[in-house]
Amino acid sequence: MDSPYRRELQVAITAAQTAAHISRQVLSAFRRPGGDGDGDGDGDAATTSAGPLDLVKDDLSPVTVADFAIQAFLVRTLGGAFPSDGFVGEESSSELRTNPGLTSRVLAVLAQCAGAGAGGETPFRDAQDIYDTIDRCVAPQKHSDTNNRTWVFDPIDGTKTFLRGEQYAINIALLEGGRQVLSVVACPLLSPDATAPVNDGHVDPTGRGCILYAVRGHGAFVRPLPGSHDEVQARRLPRHADSVLSPADLHAVTCWARLDSGVDMVHKAVAEQLKVPFPGSDLLGWVLRWVVLAMGAANMTVWVYKRRDRFAKIWDHAGAMLLFEEVGGKITDVHGKDIDLTAGRTLKTNFGFVAAPQSLHHLVLDALHNELKAQGKHELLR
Image 1 (spheres, rainbow, N blue to C red):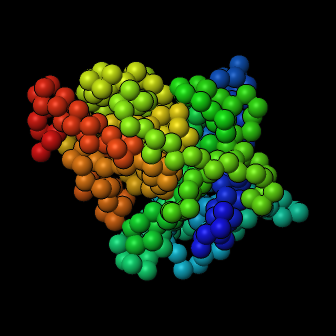
Image 2 (cartoon, one colour; image 1 turned 90 degrees about the horizontal axis):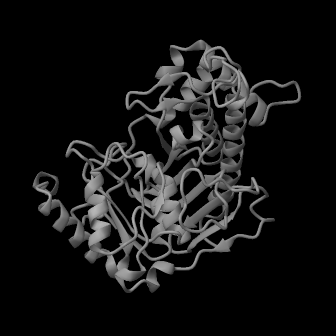
Image 3 (tube, rainbow, N blue to C red; image 1 turned 90 degrees about the vertical axis):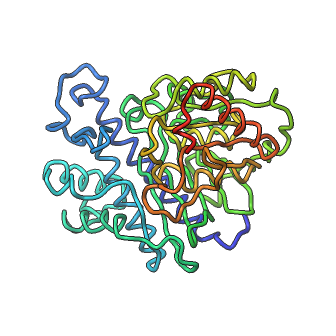
């Protein structure tokens, strides 16, 4: 791809490949017998070398060695290449600082996977170096400044499915002035040739996995995960959403089997009103849902949170949304407002999501409003 972001793209793709390697190594250790995964042993991750599951975050999702190791690695790598840029990531070091055993495992996996020297030393000096690097992602960022460049990371999107050896993603986005300009998403278990329906348990039988990437105005692409950026042939994704002119051609992606934060029956009712097969592709992680929309395995999703005080996190959507926009998709919130990525870590100026082909977005939005009113959920439209 020829674009003004060629260097950023090369660095981010190479970083995503190493991040995927880290995730696979941690997952392999977790799933070994005795690793507190699905193996035969009865080991405890708190005492098993490189076991990923050690803590529970405030939102009750598991925190893993891979989350911390990948975020530290991405900040160190992209910060080294682009030292003036800012960073936003899901993790902070507060959990690590209270758990020396977890910190040791993060250091160990980085030494193993992320450029250790010949003597096996870690690429990070010590625990404090890890903490400081991770916490570059929690410093206040002015995303709306015109000249501000901010990298946004989700080191493991879909932690619960990751721990089961199912679909997960590593999300890397570059924002300029709060505007998505670059996306790189690594999907270590997703086939680059995946077709609908795509569910969490559908793992690439070849073991390759894939990377999707996009630069604003230059299209979206998919390629196998292994191989250098210059050597591997990428496939440009067609602007399939531009050709969808009838509701009969809509295909959904949602989170149905493990739904906890959304208004489940509204999502189903919208699909029924539009005569769209439901649930279609069914995925826990938001980044994977944007990926499936970009790949053409779906072209529509709606999401309404159960409460007005529940908002999306920037790392679940920034960059990954650009993939769908680059194939002709339109994305707004439940009120039809554009998604505001300048609001900070939480997208508090938006509520929920409606994504569809440009020509049909208004029909999907109208169907959603009709269903919310019909089910007496007027408070969610305020």
